[in-house]
Amino acid sequence: MAERFERNARTVSLLTLVSRLTGLARDATLSRMFGAGPLMDAFFFAFMIPNLFRRLFGEGALAAAFLPVYAELERDDPRRAAQLASRTISRLMMVLSLLVLIGEGLLYVLSARIDHSNIALWLMMIMLPYMPMVCLVAILGAMLQVHSRFGPTAAAPIVLNLSLIIAAVTGGHLAHTIGLVDDARLAHIALVAAAVVVAGVVQFSWSLYALRDQQWWQRDHSGARDDLRRVMRTAGPMIIGLGVLQINALLDGIIASYPTTFGDTIFGYAYPLDTGAMAAVSFAQRLYQFPLGVFGIAIATAIFPLLARQSNDHAQFAHTVRRGLRLVVFIGLPASVGLMLVRNALTATTLQGGAFTRADTHQVGWILFGYAPAVWAYSMNHVLTRAFYARGDARTPVRIAIGVVFLNLALNCTLIWTPLREAGLAWSTSLCAMLQAVLLLTTPTMRSLKLVDRDVLRSWISTIITTALMAGGVAGTMLFFDTESEWGQSWTGAIIRLLIVVGVGAGIFACAAYAQKRPELAWSIGRDTGRSASRQQ
Image (cartoon, rainbow, N blue to C red; front, side, top):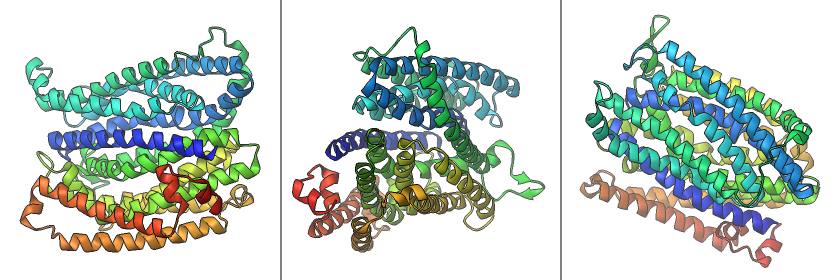
C-alpha cells in the first residue's frame, strides 16, 4: 500500500512538474506581454472568482467529501458508486449553471463600458463559464483517483497553461486584426481570458474520455439520494470553513488590487500599496507554489485515496500519515530555504523582460521572500487536512481554519501599513500557515495517532541539519558567482548561474541525505527497498 502511494505520488509529481514548468512559461509570457501593471491586476483579480468556486465546490470541499464515500461504495457496491457520481455531477451542474447565469447578469449591470477602471468586471464575465467546468473536472478527477488513475487530473493544468500561452503570444496580433475594441491591449487581455474557458472545455472533455470504460453514468440515480446527503453532510462544514478561507483570499485580492480598482486613497488617506501590487503578489504566489504543487500537494493528492481506504485500520492509517509528514518536510524545508536564497535570480530568470522591469523583479522577489519560509507548512497542512477528511472529521480543520483566517486578515490589514507593504500579505500567510500546521498536529485526533514519534522527530532534525548544509553551499556558490558580473546580466548567463546554484544545493542535500541513509530519499526517487523501509518505519 505504501509503495503504491509513493508510486502514485511520483506520477502526480512528474505531471505536476510539467504543469508547473508550463505554468512558469505561462507567467513568463504574461509578464513580458503585460508587465506588473493594471491589466494584470485586473486579470488576476477576475480569475479569483471562478477559482473561488473551484476550491469550494470542486477540488476543495465537495471533492474531498465525495472521494471517501465514492471509494467506499466502489469497493462494496459499484452500481451505487455510479449512481452517486451521476447524481453529484447532475446536481452540481444545475446549481453552478444557475450561479453563472445570475453572476453574468449582475456583472453586466455593474459594467457600463470597457475601460481600465472596470476591466476586471468584464474579464470576470468572460471567465465565469469556466467555473462549472473546472468544478466538474475536480469531481471527475476524484473518481479517476479512486480508480488509481492520477494522470488526467494532474495533467489538466497543462491544458490551461498552454491555452493561455497561445492566447498571450497570438492574441496581440489577432486583436489588431479583428479590432474588437479601440484599445488593442484590452482586446488582447480579453482574448487571454477567453482562452481560460476554452481550456475548461478541453479539460472537461478529457476527464470524461478518461472515464469512458467505467460505465459510471446512470440515468436513474434516485437511489443515491442518501449517499449524496451523506456527502453533503460532510461537505457542509468544509464549505463553511473553506468559504471563510476563500472570502479571506478574496479580501487579500481586494487589498492588493485596491489601487487599480478603487483608487489611491482610502478614507482620505494615501493607500500604502501601488498599482501593480496585485500582479506582483500573484507572480510571487506562482513561484512559491511551484515546489508546493510539484511535491507537497502531489503527496497529499496521492495519499488521500489510500487514507480513505485505511480509515478503519488505525495502525496502518497512522503509518501512512507519518510517511507523508516525513516526506513533506524532507522536500518542503529545503525548498523553503532555497527559494529564500535564490528569490531574485529566480524571478529575473523566469519573469524579467519586455514589459516586466528590473524594479518589478525586486518587488516580486521581496514578496517571494515572505511566502517561501512556509512551503513545508503549506504542504503539511494539505496532508493533515486530508487525514482528517479521510476519517470523516471535517469540523476540526474547519474550526482551526476559521480562527487562522481572521488572524491572517488582521495581520494583512496591519502589515501593509509597515515598510513590508505588499510583502506583508506574504508574511501574514506564512506565519498563519505555520501556526495552522502546529494546531492541526496537536489536536486530540492527531495526538491519539501518535504521529510525531521518535522516527518522525529524528527525520525532521536530520532534515534541518541537511538543509543548513545545503544553505551554506548555495550561499557560497552565489557569492562565488557575483550577480553583478557581466555574464550574469544576460538571460542565458542568468539561467546558467541559477542552474549551477540549484544543482549545487540539490547535490549537497542529496549527498548528505544519502550519507545519513535517510529512507525519505529512497521514497522520493522510488527505490524503497525492504531494508530501508524496515529500518525506519
